[in-house]
Length: 408
Image (cartoon, rainbow, N blue to C red; front, top):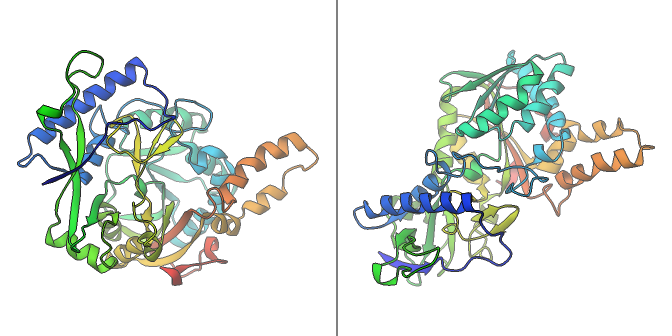
C-alpha cells in the first residue's frame, strides 16, 4: 500500500463547525478509524469509506439528523431541482402520466425522495390529470423519511414508505439525484500504465496530531493506493486508454443497481435524473482529476476526507455505463437528453404561459428558479434525464425533441 496525500487543510471559505457538528465529526472519525484499524492491511477502499461516510447508522451524512437540502436555510448543503420550484414536479407529471397510462397502473415509486419536495408537487399535479397515484417512497434515511411524512401529510394522498425494493413492479420509477450518491470506486493510472485503486488509511502514530488543543488525538486520514485487482483493471481498460497520473471513478454499485432494476421492473419505465456525461466525456483527457465533489453548507470542494458524516460526497454519472448496465439487465433505453430539453418537452413552457405576465413581481419569482433549471450555465445542460424500461411501445414525450441516445 502506498500513501498519497494528507487532509490537513480546510479549503478557504468553508464555514466553521459549531459545537454539535464538531462533536458529530469526532464520533464519525473515531468510527472510521476503528474500521480502518481492523482491516487486514490498514486500507479501506474508497467505495467503503463513502458508504460509511454517507450511510453509517446514526453517523453517516444521510443517516444522521442534519439539514441537507434547501437554498434558503444556511445550514443546508445543496439544492435540488424539485427544491427550487414546484414547477419541476408539475412538468414531470405529464411524463409520469403517460408512463402510467401505458402500463395500466397508478403506481409511482420514488427512490430517495429527499425532503419530499418532488412528491409534494407531483402528486397534486397527477391529481389534476385525474390520476390518484399509489405513491411509494424508498428512503434509506430515517431523518429524511420523517421530514417526508410531515411534508406530505396534508396532501391526504395514498403514500407508502417501503423498506426494500419491490420484487415485481409495474408503473413509473423516479430517481432524482440518486445515482450520484452511490458509493464509487476511485482509481489512478501510474506512470508505468498500471491501474491503482485508491482508498483511505490512517497516518502513522509518529505523524498524528498530539499535544493540547481541540484536535489533540484526533484521527488523521490520508488517501492511499494499491494495485487494482484484475476486475477493476479490466473495467478501466475497457473505458479509457492509459493516461499517466489520470484519476477518476467507476461506480460499480450504481451499475449493479441498474442491472438489478431489470430483475424487478416488469413493465413500465424508470426516469433517472442526475448530473453526468456520456462515457467519452466522462473520461475526457482534460478531466484528469475525475468528478468527485463534496458539498458542505452550499460550498463545494474536492476533499472527501475532510468532514465525513457532515458533508455530501458525490460523483457525476457515466450515463453510457448506466445504459450498458440497463441493457445487460434486459431493459430498453427509452430516451436520453438534457434536463432542459426534457422539461420543455414535458410541458414546462406551457405551464409558464399560464402565468400572469402583468404580475411582474410574481412572474419573476416563478421564472427565476425555472431559468436555473433550463439554463446551460446552471442545471439545464449539466443534468441529464435517462429513461429505461420494459414493455412500453409508445415514444416518451420527454424525449420527442433532442433525444441523445446516439451519443451514449
